[in-house]
Amino acid sequence: MKISGKVVAVNISKKKGVIKKPIKEGIFKENHGLVGDAHAGNWHRQVSLLGVESVDKMRKQGIEGLCSGKFAENITTKGIELYTLPVGTKLKIGETVQEVTQIGKKCHSGCEIAKEVGQCVMPKEGIFTKVVKGGTVREGDIIGILIDE
Image (cartoon, rainbow, N blue to C red; front, top):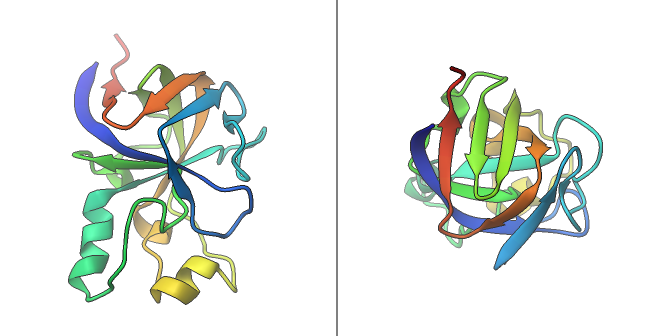
């Protein structure tokens, strides 16, 4: 495993398309995602991740009030360029193993995040994963890239 980054925050929301709120720890269920989150389910975008580095780019453009969960990401990361990871990459995040399934996304019209923030960084720099092995993820947990041997 190559240690690449760490978890800055775990974020959750009951509804889709809204800003997520930070929680102390999240329970991630295999083939489901973050328990209690609106985006969880048996599909390829169970968990969303975004780096603080991407959020910082938005801050530098003069957008104020940005914090973890503002772009509806489940896991805010630091120290890893998420959008450069190939689809299929396996990540060890806390107790979980997650597989990258998609880089970026098309924002839906009327997105609350784009309305409030002005624009969204998720379409280019956010990534999505499916949970291969469930477990707990907490703020401060290490993120490692699993290398097939």
